[in-house]
Length: 278
Image (cartoon, rainbow, N blue to C red):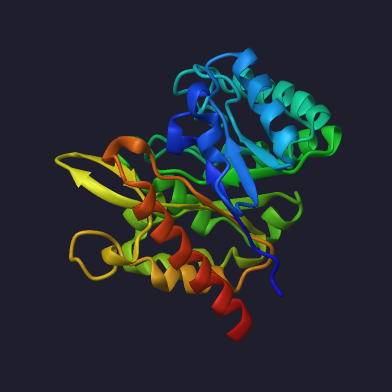
């Protein structure tokens, strides 16, 4: 058995402390959360996790207004400041029992003239050092850049596997970002990294003019001609080992609880049946 788990993201409530209780779905295995409005909100969440005995991981930044995208190049913060933040969060979260921390990496705003592989490896060296020093797994989530730039995802796709291997870091595949970047080629892009995938962010995409929002996974999207088909990538990901499937839609589309639960059940049934039959 592949020992998959199914979790909920704090994105579903935008980490609103008044709604923390809504993250503890029936039979859910795990919660991933970040961008707390305050330290007191974070500790209130920790208390709930202990009370309900629910494991958690943290999506950096821990606190709102921290660095999200700056580990390789300056977006809002100098990369040295961003790396210091990651180290401080790792030290704290290791003590407090987080299962992992997740960072946006590699993130590029767009095309760069830098030596990309060298830049990524320097980042890997630093993240690996922090992971080892504080004994907390660090999960790397490749992201779209500005204006939906797929460059970060493409640069990772070209990055040598044997170099990544040296640093013992795992990956998060954000299904929405990858589908926007690669479309129907998504499995081809993800296949190379199969043994490193430990987290999957689950949502579909609704385009609103030149913007888009994350909407819940749901079987009705598979053939509606508007959303992406998720079944092929879910079937593939079910063959990976020990993946945390995290439901990461946002509340902007105002989905009903019934709609969200239908998508959850559909996903879980598909993943688990593929495990048994795969």
